[in-house]
Image (cartoon, rainbow, N blue to C red; front, side):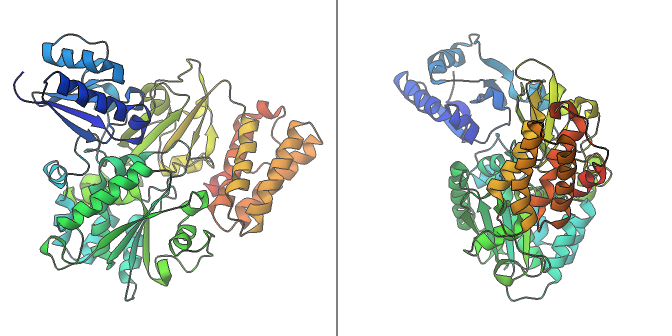
Length: 526
C-alpha cells in the first residue's frame, strides 16, 4: 500500500468512555512494531453511538468504517487494511450507513469529519464563510438575516433569536456580552457536547458573528463541569482562534474586536436557566432572578447580554453563509431549519440525528432509532428532558415542531428523546419529576421549593391508596399552583411529566384521572 494509512477515530466522550483512547494507543504501538505507516486523526463523533468507537479509514477519498472496535481488534484490522481481507466489524462506506445517509446535516456537517483543532480543516470544509460574510455587513442587516431565517432558540423555549439580537443591538451601554449556555443538563441530551468536542470553531464563529452584530466584545461559554473533554477541546480551540486572528482586537483584519473565555459551572441543574447562569458567572449563588429586567437589557454584570444555547449560535454561520431563505426552506411552519434530535434510553440505535423539523416522533423512535434495545414494544417516550412530557405510541404520528408539540401538552425542548419499553412505571416516573425538582430547585420561590416536596408526598399517598380521590384533587391543585406561581420554568414545568403520565397512562396510577385535571395546564407550561 502506497503512503500512510489515513485513519480517523473520535475523541468524543462516548467513544472515549467505550475505549477509544486505549484503541488509539494500541493502534499506534502495533503500527510501529509492524513498520506500518499510519496517520491517525482524532475527530468528533458521527453520532452513531451504538457503533462507537468507530474507526474510519480513507480509501480513495471515501471513508470506510469499522465498529464498534476495541483494542483486541487492532492487529486484525491492520491486516485487513494491508491485505484487503474481510473483517467482521467492517461497515463499508460510513456515509452510506442509513442512519447517517438520511440526515440533513447543516450544524453537524463537519462533526466527525474534520480535526476539531485545525482551523485549516474547518475552513476547507466550508467553515468561516458565514463569518467572512458577516464582517462585510452592518449590524442591522445581520439582525434582519437572523430574523428572516426564522431561527428560534434551541435551548427549549423556542423564542425567536432575531428578536433577542435586535434588543441587545439597540441597547445603549459601554459594554455588552455574549453568553453561551452550555450547561446541557437534560436527560438524553448531548448535542451541545458533541459539537463542542467535534467542531468547536463553529461555536466560536457563531459567537463572533453575534458579538460584532450586537456590539459585544466579550463572550463566555458557561460549560458544565461534567464535560472535561469539551473543556479541553474548547480551550485549545480558543487559543488556535486567537493565534489565527479569529479572536482578539482585530478579527480577520476588520478592526472589530471580540474574545471568548470558558467558565466551568459547579454542577447545578438550575444554572441552565439563563438568569441563574448569569448569577453563577458573576460568582454568586445560582439563584433565579425575577424578570423584568430581561438579560438582553440588564444581564451579566448589569450589562446588555445575549444569552443563547450552543446549537442556536452554531446555526448562525450557515444562515449567514447561504442566506436566510436557504435555512428557512427547511422545516415546517414557524419551526424552520434543522434540529439535532438525540435518541437515548432503551433504544437500539441511540445517537444524534439531525433533520428538518416535521419528522414524526414515530419515525425517530421506531425507524431511525430501531425501536427498543430490549426488543419489546415502545410504551412511552419522554421529550425535552426530565421535565418533559411522556407520550404514548398513539401520538407517534405527531410531527416534531414547536407548535404541534405545544398543542399536545409537550415541547421539543433541546431535542432529547428518551425511550421506555413495557417495564416502565409512569407513576414512579411522575414521582421522580417531583423528586428531581426537590434536589435541583434553587429554593428561591415557594411554589417550586415546597410544591415539589408536597408532590412527592401526594404521589406516595396515591400509590398507597390513601384517600385517592382527594389526593388526585390535591395533585391537580398543586400542579396548577406550580405552573402559575413559580418564578422560573423549573417549577413551572415540573407538572408536565406528572400530568402527561396521569393523562396517557392512568392504569399505572390504578385509577382513571379525575375530570378536573386541566389539560390546559399541560400546554401552558410547555
